[in-house]
Length: 483
Image 1 (cartoon, helix red, strand yellow):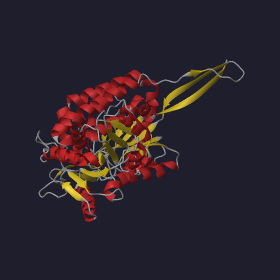
Image 2 (image 1 turned 30 degrees about the horizontal axis):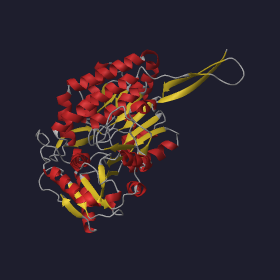
Image 3 (image 1 turned 90 degrees about the vertical axis):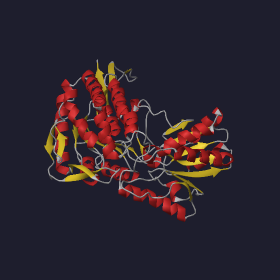
Image 4 (image 1 turned 90 degrees about the horizontal axis):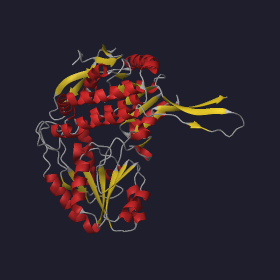
């Protein structure tokens, strides 16, 4: 590992001290103990990073060809795999994720994402067209990098978040200033060590850790940043959109969700129960697309909830270093208090904890998998994003697709939705009626970097991943030449 002090930022291909010299403690969520520190970057550091990115972008326009961008991303993917266990250990201690989950999902998927985006570097192109106006013309479009981009990633999937942001930006030829979440910056900082040796020109990727209200706000406000890509809370997304509007800055925001899971009477209950349990409780519920509203037909509700509870009882919770552990802690004591507040208020309003709901004793920020029944559609726990291992169950009686879709759409979010039925007509009928960026039928999986990801309404705007996610980092220039 390159020589990096706790107060360092990565700018222009090298480690530099942050201007303030101050740091932020790194807390292990499984123990509550400090395991180190990161720099508390601020406005001066962001300005240095944007300057370095601007200079690198100017140089790279002539020398960093598409195939070189492709090769660099492929090399970075290989480097993540070569240091896979080191990244897994960093992620485990920094986030509280169970080591088995990080080894199986976060590390390999981060490498896979970079490989996917590498393929786009040589395939972005404009087009030619015939004009109808009188004259002899050559008309075409050029697809060019948008410029310096500011990227702000969340704390729930830090390594994957960095790969999903850096990959498409570099493939499109942009220069990056990345701000990792202040709670989970270690994997992004380790990734910085690999950039130079993987062929990424100095300054094309700069990493400035720090608090959102300082480093993040400075990045959004900076006039040298052409685009902001943010993943995180709806509240912060709103603030970013307002701040960026003064400069007409491009913004892509992937925000919160309160995703419905619709289970019709003919669904395969065993398959549904397994998928629903993993969909809400994996990563301790800290997934924006988690299916947290279970809308199930009353005729099968009791049987389905019983199955989910049985599966949940077998999910080992505890030490993330134990390969048998499936569920770790939530990210912080503040987040645990927030989650438990939702549960306690729902219980006080008549809800019942079918499982969980009790704050465990001992070290670490653990929240038990909780299934809430006897809740109403107007209750906070049904309408707001909890971002924890809490499933709200709402049985329904109707078989009318319009009414069922109305229940699913009765929310301000629109990130993901899930449908369980053996009837293809019902499935497709609901797909067309549900307002959501993603709809999955008879699965909670199918996540692939080839598929565009994003939401509608309070879940954000724009799309990441897929061709759309790469093209979001480009501008189209129209060219007309008189012959």
